[in-house]
Image 1 (spheres, one colour):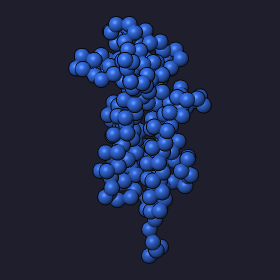
Image 2: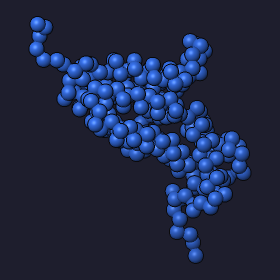
Image 3: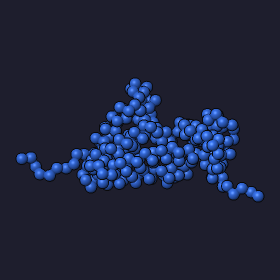
Image 4: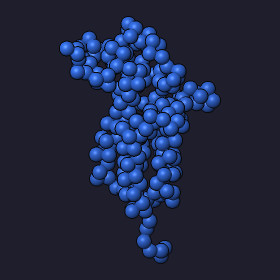
Length: 219
């Protein structure tokens, strides 16, 4: 009798299998984010993870499905952090809400620089991987940013830009963390240090927000 498990469905994980999968996913995130999908071979991932050969196909079915699991793990961290930040910010003053969420986004990006590295590579290729990322993760974040922007616009506390400009100005501000090695060589500064992360967040918040409008003129 043949197995009913589809190639895209991961095998049920025992404790040992779960540990092996976690090692492979960690190594896969690192290699996919630095070398890209095409330049990353499954044997290289297995070697980096310190596991036997052919375990990616055994546990995940194929390189494509393994990449999806790696991206789900990576982007899922950010999804969780941003969801938590949005919940925390519900009752904050409108301008402070935007600044708080910008700060949380930058902190999340600094903790997960692999996300921006992946998007540098995948964002310029109109293929199935980009479509998968947009459908599963990126569009969700864009909708969160759109809601933040529209709330800020209604309260007169966002810069005079379109929502698309607002989104890409915000997202591109995280590139400093993806390019941390260059920043260290160029400026002798580690952009992932907490003080630098907060300084970057404050700078972007100042660019993207405006003080609330006041009524009446000077007396």
